Image (cartoon, rainbow, N blue to C red; front, side):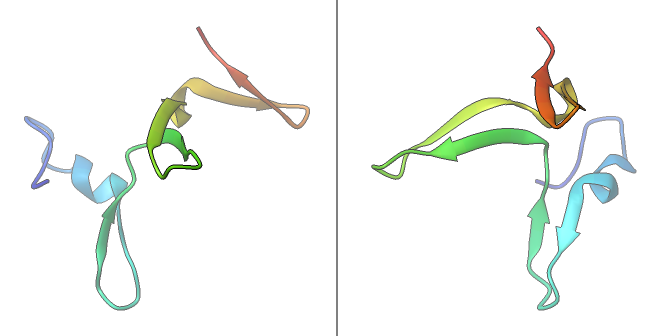
Length: 59
């Protein structure tokens, strides 16, 4: 990914560089891998609140 259309500063907000220089994009998607190695996307972190130790997902 080289950027967001019309938002030139946005990539800096979501990218993370490891100490060896490898670049990762943290989009805020929440997912899990099943026993077969398939990834299932479940939600977006931006749509979640933490209240009293519980994760509350907005509908």
